[in-house]
Image 1 (cartoon, rainbow, N blue to C red):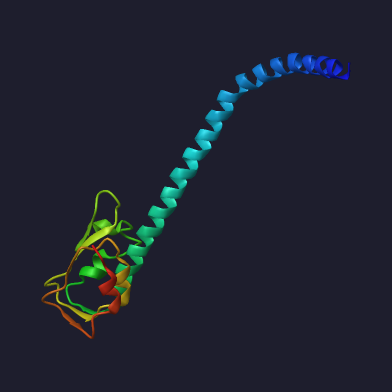
Image 2 (image 1 turned 180 degrees about the horizontal axis):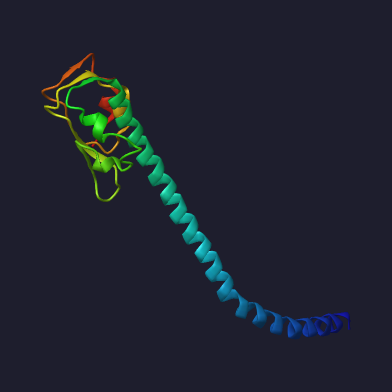
Length: 151
């Protein structure tokens, strides 16, 4: 007899649970949409943060090079390499960026009559595939960090 009472005790719960389950099913799609929207926003903001960080890394490396230039007779870097007047480093003279990642892929500063030292920060240009500094007056050793560039 106790088994029958248990069965009877469960039966009303199931009947009561069915409308609640149906109610939850109706609320589920909007809730899932909200969760999907939040996940999408998190991915977009995460991608933007990564992009901004990588862009800042490349910008810092280029500004470190600019700081080590002791002679810029034609005022090329003074006029063009400024985050205030031209925040997009991909538009800086001598800089080429890849379309996909918006990262520095080439640096062509040949024959610009620069003098100075090549800073180790250029090793942070992780997408760099071409570096052309010929016909300038750079001195000192090449930084070890350049040997870590793999592209």
